[in-house]
Length: 93
Image 1 (cartoon, one colour):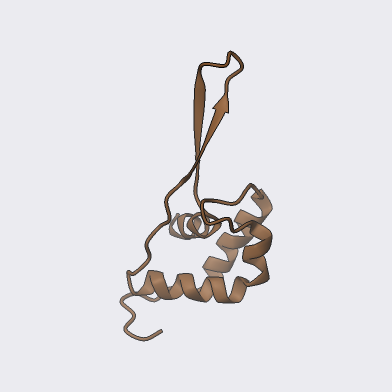
Image 2 (cartoon, rainbow, N blue to C red):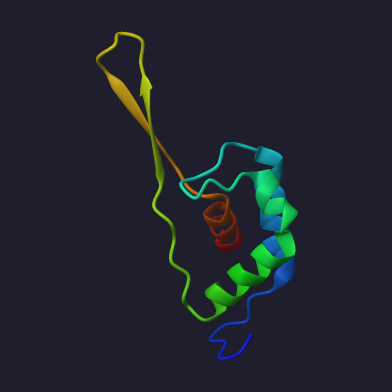
């Protein structure tokens, strides 16, 4: 990691991903499921480490899902982050 501003360690990011993996859930706006993220976990974690350490990380927009509340009129909006955003959030907690 050249030009690092901060030391971002791999183990806490992997731990954060394991928490995301345990929770499951659907893919975010990027379409990356937990399974797809896990297939390339080393590359994904390394990319996230680099982006966080150089302050170049740009979160993706939230996936917005409208849910019918039963009466056909009122809708509830769910906003879902991408799997990598969940890892970042859990890492920073």
